[in-house]
Image 1 (tube, helix red, strand yellow):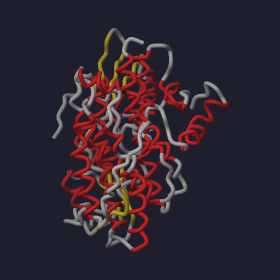
Image 2 (cartoon, each protein chain N blue to C red; image 1 turned 180 degrees about the vertical axis):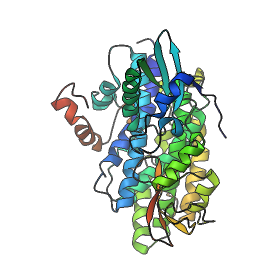
Image 3 (cartoon, rainbow over the protein chains, first blue to last red; image 1 turned 90 degrees about the vertical axis):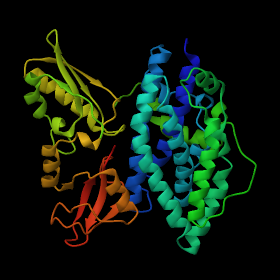
Image 4 (tube, rainbow over the protein chains, first blue to last red; image 1 turned 90 degrees about the horizontal axis):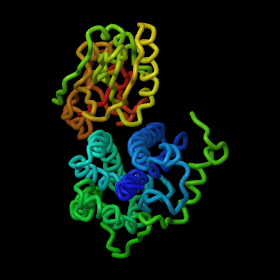
Length: 251
Length: 166
């Protein structure tokens, strides 16, 4: 493949949204209330829509006959480059919102920079997606505050979720080889530069939610290299079941 | 306000106006603002549409509907999906806004009004049933990606609000 770095860079962005979209989709019909159920599946739909644009572009670059569906559905676990944060299970609504919030703040910052990419396809996708992601961020931030500043029980549970998921936040700002190459070309976003703004924003919301900012300095990593947590295999089994059972099936 | 020129061949306007959004049948795709260009080149109609939301499942249907309607009108059509410039609710025409209201969906206000709702500020979203602005938001996400759920405090009717997107 000629543009291997660009291809991998696109997957790095798209896989985050695909896997998070899959997690949110699991709540279809299982959300804690009708409104939150619809909200989570709406966000899932937005993310999957964005993913299609990325994978279509990726398929064009790969130029080996694979389609967007092949890229989304038929890779092995080690070939997915999403961060560990997005593959963490729903557990309860607190975890679901904590994961969403910790990703949304990053996602919004990243897209703000990707809008300026010299790659016109990526910048167009970013400009489209950021409008949707601003709604996601508003929704998840709102819930962090409601749960944190809610009852004793909700406060306890959202704090537990934030504490547990905190260890996956630092990975968002790690650069891969593809990242470095694309930043050098003006195509990619230098994620290391987003870190300060990210924690500033996250901490401000946590403070407003009367939650404490976790102090642990130990962070997990690996997703961006394809080394995933134990949850990923189960998630992919669900995601890929239809394609594996009925090869080449279409809607 | 985001402005971009739409290049629509006048000959095609009537056909395009006959096609509606499958989720909101009262709204034509022209009034919705999703048709960005429609030109005739060497007897082939080339049409560019842009999605309201990335994951909008109506886009595939709209593309097929366009091809079918054009064929009926004697044209062979090619439909392309473009992302840039990104769709905004500003592109819904005044006629489209009226159609939405009549159908029972509150038309989008501006971005400030959307924020105001969330911050429990001034109430601005008008109930399409009774016209009261004494309304509250039930959920930021509604029956489709482009809508939020509201309820009127006066007539108690729940209703959809077309989210502002800029």
